[in-house]
View 1 (cartoon, rainbow, N blue to C red):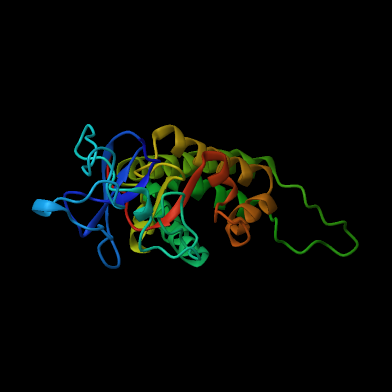
View 2: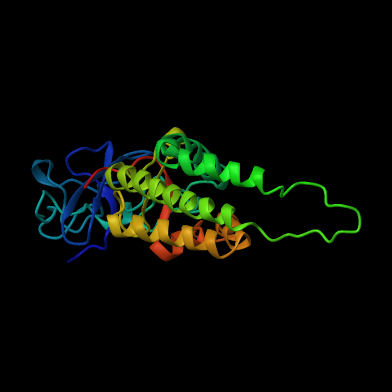
Length: 257
């Protein structure tokens, strides 16, 4: 008999739950909430009677896996989590929108400061180009105002944007692939993971998140705004870039693979 992937009571520690990937135990654990699972009636010698709930296949004994025992029965899967709380398929609670926004603001400030040694020169020349262009000067009486930006502004704005995006990519890639959380998300108690698999996201997943967010910003500011607001009405609490990368922002940390 096989059991579906999910969280089950850890046979080695009754205070914990452990993630079963469908064939073997993983190293992912979380505290269990509530009373210990019902173990049924015990037979002679204190051993559980065959066929009682809470035990895996075999003669009342859990089945053996690569890292230990098989799951202790399907009824305990996801124990301690309310059905009304939005969560991943394996039961990890999804992050609220306000916390996501707060984490993003914190990360934006950190990225700006970290990136100054790389973007500072372009930013300075960009400001100079704006000042020299008289862009905000009041037009003469009867003159038609021009909303066309001088070439000098684009000359510095484009490399400024590209370098800034590369700094953001390096920042996200370094933190997310290691712990699943940037400093901003750690402050807010959040992390990023694949929706179906716990643990820090892979490098390709981080690239998908970054690329889709960057493309939204380049195409249209309104699309970028929709991306930010999308978790407010999405049943999986995913932004558009989460849907592209198949990720979720969740409450709590991720264990390293």
